[in-house]
Amino acid sequence: MICLTGDVHHSSLGTNDQRYLDPARDSEARIAAQYVKLAEQFGLKVTLYVTGKTLVEEWRDFQSVAASAAVELGGHTYGGLPQTRWKKLWYRLRGVRPPSHCRTQGSRRSQRRDMRRSVETIRRFTGRQVIAWRSHGLVYDRHTGPLLAEAGIRLISDEISVTRLRPVRTADGLLSHPINVLPDHDHLFHAHRDERFVAQARLRGYGTDAFGCQSYGVEAWGEIVQEQVTRIEAQDGVATVLMHPVCQFLADDLRTAAKLFEFFARHETVWASDLLNLGEAGSRALGG
Image (cartoon, rainbow, N blue to C red; front, side, top):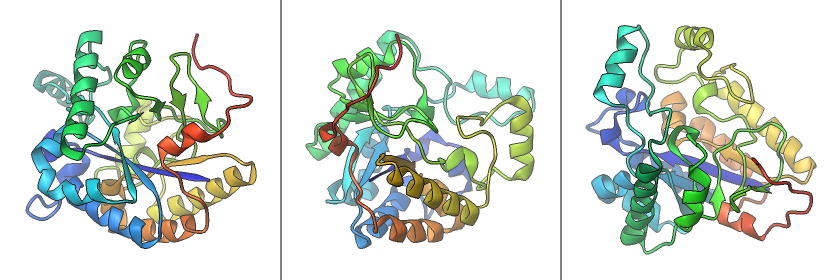
């Protein structure tokens, strides 16, 4: 069973990946539309976590994505946790490319406001109730879980894990389905993430997760994804795959994505919300 997911951000956020797009032609919203059409061709379900500002600022380009019968929308913060001007300057003075998002969610009050705004925006534009969430950058603190539950969120995918093969219930009552297949962004050569950037980031300890700090060309990455999905399926697990539309576009114009979608089509794909129906025997609470 495969839970195919992706994240979509508004253009005004100005992420590092977005700097490699032609703004006259491409945006994450437009690329997501291509990605979804491809998923539709293979009969796949896909959960896309989207920033609220994407709908507000780019609804014309994102409307077809939201209307697709193949797509479930999840929250991805409202504003994408942007870096302040001063924080960007702090990084640049140290010779480091600023990350595309803050490392913290901010205060409890600001988190609550952002979550509510995100959920309400998606509901206003689409009529859909949002129950799935992934923070930009997987940023999470002790307030996040309780506030998400308060906002009506029931599922979260903010953990990267090699060992968790099935959803588990968190201490806050959310159902967590960790990204347990090699994610693309921090493990895929694309945009600014060339060998030199990755080597320098490794020295700073940046970009290391449960899968380590190794990055791959897109074809090699795709082969690893297939191997890991096959292994998880053989153990009756749920393979949660993170494939950003923009990363796949920048890596090779969605060619590897098409090959993976063809492979995924041989298996059952589910939305994040479908995981609520799975039994949780043997699950244990995360956290305290």
